[in-house]
Amino acid sequence: SELWLCHCTPACVTERDPVSKNKKKKPKTENIVNVKSLEKVSELVLLNASIQKVKSIENNTKLFGSNFVIPGSEKKALIILNYTAKFGIKNDVTIKDNGNHNYQVTLPKFEVIGVELDKDKPYTLYDTSGGILSYSTKDIDTGEAVAEGFSNKEQQDFIKDNEKLLKESAEKYYSTMIKSLDHEAKVTVEGQK
Image (cartoon, rainbow, N blue to C red; front, side):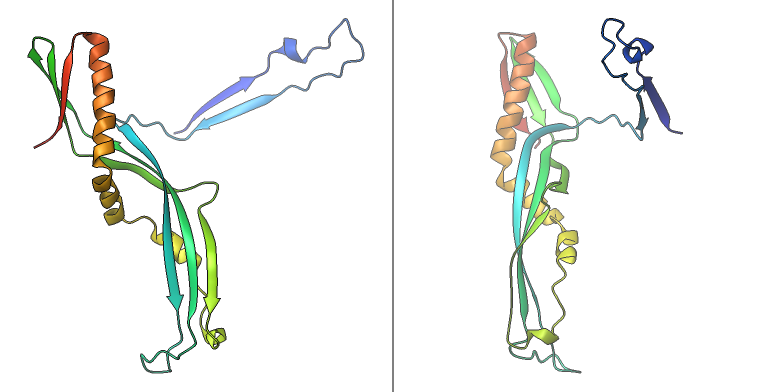
């Protein structure tokens, strides 16, 4: 079942202004909002990223019935894929009070929270070229390249390459939160062992 919300403009807004007869009557408006889904999440975004992936694609024509590539039949395209991504924590964090205003925060592993193609400009076809006999070669399918996306391995490599930034962001977040409750707090943040 879906939840429907309806909001109507109050009648006082649509009535004519008795002082000025020249004003036009404002039409009655009605807004309908359909909430498709709501989901509670326990995720903490520590790093937003705008990522460009440059991909070179090549097609060529092979001699009928063989794997021999006809020289000069290649078509090449260079496309730039634009992604937005969020990285952070999805699992529980352990905060231990060691006494005397000392707190130890243990972080779970960092994870990808979301990756999607940029809404405004998902990709740019940067360059296309072809050999002298490329007219016989199938055109480059940029849609296929876009659909392949930002692979899981590339995502994990990004986390590994930016682990220091993720940890610094987590340290700042949890230190600020704990120090707002205990102004004398000394906070140590570490990853799970």
